[in-house]
Figure 1: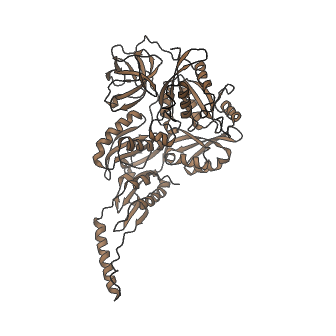
Figure 2: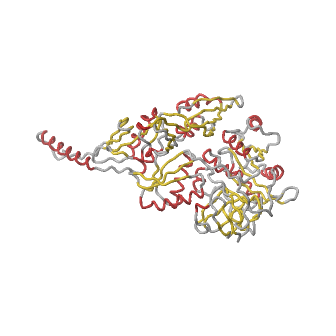
Figure 3: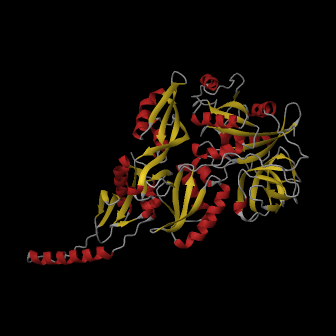
Length: 598
């Protein structure tokens, strides 16, 4: 156990975590150069296309130090985007230390701070590393100063590396071996292992990723999940070296996996403790923080026959993505589906893409919303995250919405633009402080509902990519809420309803109507698209009908002939409108989903 080190790489998005993981894997020679490719731990197409890490991945690296000793280094790579903080917290629960990676040109950013605090909460040893020192814009001295002033870490012996060029990688290995503490725990004690991740294999069932804190796990052992008392027999146990490598046993301190023919997907819960069935441990390990979804949206299959497939797909995806929550839902317009909770809008997009790609489904999503607290006149308190469940406004005493504390780190020149953006989103400026003469940290209290749409994209564009953003949920505060319904030809489409702040209702309704006008195909009759609050219409657009030229055959004669034909056409159009059904394409629902316009 003295020769094992468990560590994670944490950083702000785009500071080079995946590239550093690639170099460490190459240096450890666990894969041949012929089989190696960039972003080797990002095994989803969507991760590779977007250049982001979504899932934490584990790899076991053998290393021989300069003193001749052999070590096993278990690396758990983590995502950097604010939406996937939950993945980071789960990875950190399995480690004794972390490499805090900082971009030499960007410096300390909001997620750098947030991830450092997460690591300190888990009492981890933190090694600061400055990456991208080969860039022309790299300012190493400024970054060292920020590490000391902003993070409170010692910058004297900070590691200087370039993961892309492979500079300083050997020093990273040496520092991990020297600085990070070995795991503690007794191999002779009762088995105590933490499930920190899992994924589903269609042939082997659930593959459970574990960190063993005490005891030994071997194939053939009878094990017990402590949260639900489900018992299984271990078929295979091993470690990750890009591929799964079976082992005779896993001992205390190791990170690995086991397969036990688990076909009941819901039995495996992240944060659960695994122990032996015959000799269980006395108490479960303290699990990491459960995720709290902040954005809610309903998912429906385009073909109602695909509902069963969607149910199976979501259950399997839940195993790969523990932060996803879901329950059954139904809609008059779209049929049966699921009401899902997400950690943010990027998380929502990723889940939608994974369901469509990995399970071959065609889906419709409703407009995202946050959870509101509604206090009724009867004194009852209800939590609402679905516009369809919004009660009668006359029965409502008070509504509350969640507020967040947003931390934005930005160069000074963008201060005015950020202030305007946050105040436009009903934000309250709390304070700002200069970290250096050119960089400042701004704090705002903002309604979560105003952030979930496109706040992050807007912030990135007004700060030319230099602004960084992180948030924590604060509390619930009173708000003026309105339910905006969309009517198409006088019929309410429940899947397009939105809960918005009353001040924004007209703007949001007008925007939704304009988007739908572009997406819904023209008919032979006039189609009215209206936005309404209750019975009051607050916006309207009209899709003009196709018009057959009935007067084309009249090439002369009296005008009354033409008028008679036009009147006849008019009567026919009226009759058509009475029975006409409007087909709403999938793209129309998606266009309203992206209606984050200000």
